[in-house]
Image 1 (tube, helix red, strand yellow):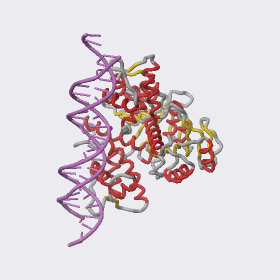
Image 2 (spheres, chains in turn red, green, purple, blue; image 1 turned 45 degrees about the horizontal axis):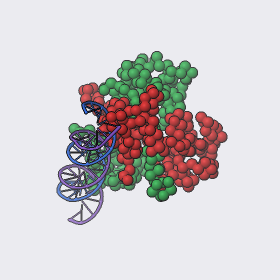
Image 3 (spheres, chains in turn orange, blue, red, brown; image 1 turned 45 degrees about the vertical axis):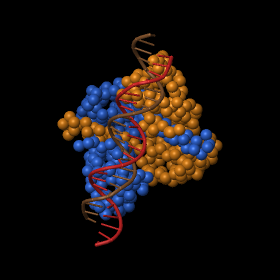
Image 4 (spheres, rainbow over the protein chains, first blue to last red; image 1 turned 60 degrees about the vertical axis):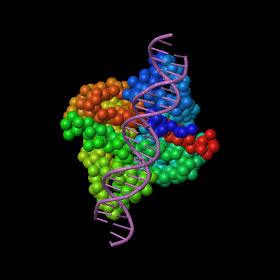
Length: 213
Length: 213
DNA sequence: TAGATTGTTAATCGATTAACAATC
DNA sequence: TAGATTGTTAATCGATTAACAATC
């Protein structure tokens, strides 16, 4: 079985958003065209992507919204709760601790860690901040497999090493540092400056077109 | 002239990070292979991407680091300061107001806006929070062309409309809502749940490989 | 000079899109 | 039944990779 293409995978959460909107409007079926219209995509792309999740639609009828939502959630792994820890309770880390979008996707941050003793012992949006010493015991106690890194770039690799030692298997790295981890650990980079670069260049290109360089 | 491919554009900020590291180590030239090794990419891809920024290297010598940094910064539009406003001073908005990575890229958030009267008048990480009424006058006063949206999904479209009326030409949308804007306005989505989905699925795939489903 | 590294042209790979048969 | 919509197979498009000539 061939694995889902990365661009398709990235579109799945968008489909989920749209489907949840449709559902809250009381609808119970959608066609690929309905979804495509919401997202400015082509219907054929939706159908191709849906096939990867294993869901099948009915010709003439379309897809059952409830089944489709379940299939996508299950495919991504959002149908059951997942525990995570967060390292780095600075401005970005604090924001993520309070981000409502995570609980919507069944992600639960069970503990935060920070080397700053001033922050240790505090509770940020209902999550307790611990010293780094506590990392391994808490990770193992809650059987945590996923970690979020929101520390400054110079600390990113040290933190990564500690997480790996504690048994973490997936790291979501919000620091712009390039971190190295063993092959069994999945690392997802989330460098905000990438998105900023894309926006800037596209704005420039658009301005050039209108002659307003 | 054909425009830079999106994947290449997204790699440019990573090159910049690596080059700045090399520079702080006192080096003044790099080869494509040096960069590739840092980022787990192939040298040929670096050379192809560099060509888009217009920079040329010297056979046998490689690229001049200072020139390369300048060329990439200039290409992206990070060599001069850019003003932006932020709408939605909630947890994520507050984080972005304090995010050090932006000033490194010459992005200056001149004002924040929030409909919550409790937040209005406060100063968050040196940025003043205003009521939405002030949006248009402040945007025009500072000649702001770029805006960051960090409001809850139901407000995203209303905020977008207000930004467009105020003359904003580029929107960085951190809300998971799909927003509509006129064609002259560039919209960059930054939905964190996309990255989360990619991490989850890749973790699952890795577990399956090790037989630990 | 000889070797290393760039930049270009061609080949491959993978994702998107098109065409169309199957079917509720 | 006829029309609409799915899912599959083929064609196109674009990005990555390979091969290699140019050159400091």
